Amino acid sequence: MKTKLFSMALLVSSFAFSQQAQTFSEVTIQNYSPLLYLKRSVNDGGFIRGIQTQYQNGGNGWFFGDLYGTHWVVSKGDHNDAKLLINENGNVGIGTVGPLSKLHVAGTIMAGAGDSVTGINAFSIPYANGSICNWGSLRSTGSSYMSYGVKASGTNAGWLSSSGDISFIKTAITLDDGGFRLLASAPQQVAIDSPVTMPEIMKISTSGNALLQGKLEAKEVKVTLTPTADFVFDENYNLPTLENIEKHIKEKKHLPEVASAKEMEKEGVNVGEFQIKLLQKIEELTLYVIEQNKQLKKQAEEIEELNHKLKTK
Image (tube, rainbow, N blue to C red):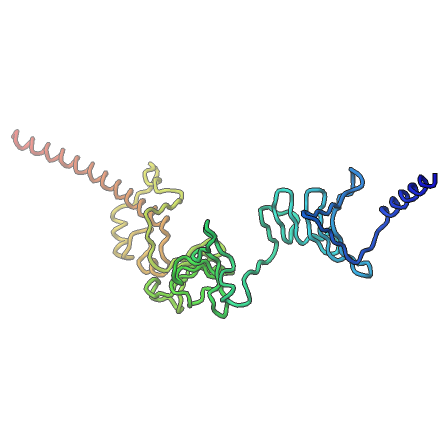
């Protein structure tokens, strides 16, 4: 009987011990494959499962753990202020609780060491064998301003630059408040009147307008612009007389509705509008040719009729 009562007392004592918070100076779990289970006492509720650090005064430090069974978080203070989150899809969020990709950073990313030598491969693309692709890495230039760029070849040429400094040998592409700019240090690639040492050869402003200083070579260029010049063939179109055109040319030294050479040099030429204007003039010339052809046929018929009358006399 005494043995039974003693066993019952031990059982009650163990149960009470398990229901109270216990304090240990150190805890070591040693095993071949050690596991620590944070197990809920009920099946429903209790969506927090983790480790909460605390200061001596009871204030919360860092929380590491599982929320809702769908998120693993590292937070400061308690589980509500997530600094790093991994959702059940494997997406990692830093500064955001709703990562949209495998790595989603809401804020600034800084990479590399404290100097340009050890931090030269801040971000690199590895080959399948594990070696680093130097030509496809986000690198530091090694200069004092630490401009970063994507190396496009074995030399310093072809960088995608954040500053556009003239230390780049060939080209640098920059993006700032003024828009997208393609720079070049070789003067022969740009307009002669370019005012800067490393002149802009191409610029796309924030409004979407593009400026190119230099030549453009392409296999095909397509310009979409409406309306076209087919209105010339409308029956109600007022075709200018050749006499009026001749008078305009003598006075202005250029075709009607076409900008003068001085205007083109000063303002440039809108390729789409200019092509339509040229098409309009070609269509007008076609109408003149058709009209002259009719007149020539009529004159030929009249000459033939006169010749026939002369022969019959």
